[in-house]
Every structure is written in structure tokens, then in C-alpha cells.
Length: 176
Image (cartoon, rainbow, N blue to C red):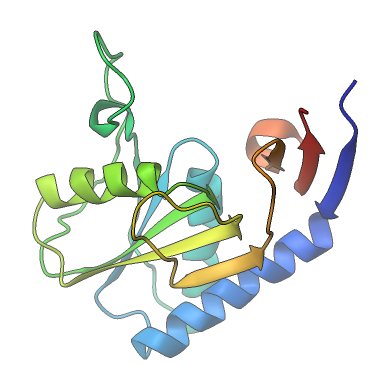
């Protein structure tokens, strides 16, 4: 039987999203030329929240899109379901902020970078993650982190978002 330990409750979750948003504004000197792309599935609601917070803080809407990385993954072979990407703006010459829930090996982010570059040539691609749990297999590092959470390989991190799960939380549990 797995036992969960709550690492972030809804209040901590909200503070992390706000902090990431402020850091994005600080680093980019505002939101001009920015766009936010959330990686499906839980990176999408996080990205939408960050885009909304940036708009609220800066008084200007930040373009938001969602990215399905399934066709770009290196661990899936055979038939892939139809891609569910929705990026209703050009990425060429934009500062793209990719948003994901958990950064682990870096393979999902590599797939996301490939997918973005296939759509155009951005000025830059920055990475925002709610949780960085370590164990990288690729040389990828986030620009914005909600929480660093060192884990063992037997531990799992479960992110819940209200939009998909009915609540906001981050929990860790051991499968070992």
C-alpha cells in the first residue's frame, strides 16, 4: 500500500505559480515578446495560470498554447494518436516559456523543444517547472522552479491540479 506525503498544498502551489510569474517578468524585463506553452497534460493548466498571472501583473495578455509531445518522444514506437497541440500564434522570434509539472530525466523537455523548433525559430526557449526532482539523463536545467524536490528512483511525484483532479497539491510516495 502506497503512502502519500503532501509536499505542497493549494496555498504553497499558488505561491509557487506567483513566484515563477514574478521571476519570468524580472528576467525578461516584462512580458513583451513572451509566449507561454504548457506541456500536456498538467503543464497546460500550470502554463495557463502563469500566463493569466503575467497578464494580471503586466496589464497585457500573454499568448498561451498547449503542446502535445507524444509524437516527439523517443520512448514511444508505433502508431501515435492524433496530436492535441494548440499553439494559435507563431513562435518565430518569440521568447517561449515552456511549462511542465515535473522535471525528471529531461526527455519530455527535449521532446517539447523539438516540437517548438519544428514550428519556427524562437529567440529563446526557457523552462518553468513546478517540481524539479533531479535524476537528469540529458543536459537540461530549468530556468524557473517552484520547488526542488530531491527524490530516490523508487519515489514518485504526483501533481494534482484543480482543472483535472479537483484540487491543487503535490505529493510524494514510494513504490518500493
